[in-house]
Length: 201
Image (cartoon, rainbow, N blue to C red; front, side, top):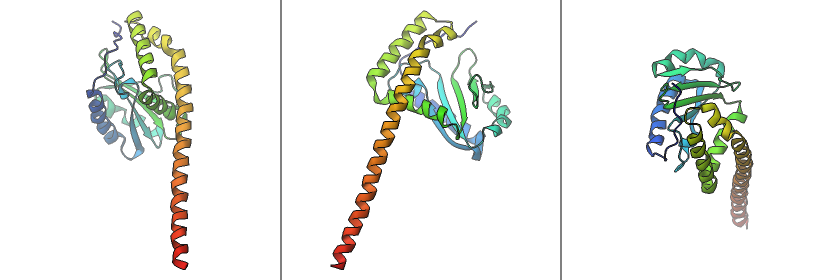
């Protein structure tokens, strides 16, 4: 029987579930792991979602990950390889009652890493867009309760547009942050210079 697609109200325990699982993932990947990120709808405060925790570990060398498949299997994961995205290692936990997804990317793959982080941060910062996205997901879940392809196809165009907006927004935020950092740096430098000059006088 196909898995039922269910979109439920936000649950605070999703953050705890992510933290608990990320500790296990870090232990498996060891020194190859440079970071583990909570992504997807369960990472957005207040956003209704399918109750599946999406986790994105980032590693130094993706070619070393497959050697840990047996360890992931011991935690209950199915190892799916790239599963449609070149350079990814995908793992699913829970069978028909799916609980977790792991998407592992190499740190050199900034395109995939940044698009996931940008969408998460954009939705957290724009409650109107989050509400719009939630309404679409609920509509599609009702329309395609046992058809994951239909559900995913139904939001494909929306997600492309959302990713584009999120990446532009992220780029703007990065420029603003850089500008503030430079202002502070030059402010400190000129301030120090001013103090030195006053001493010389």
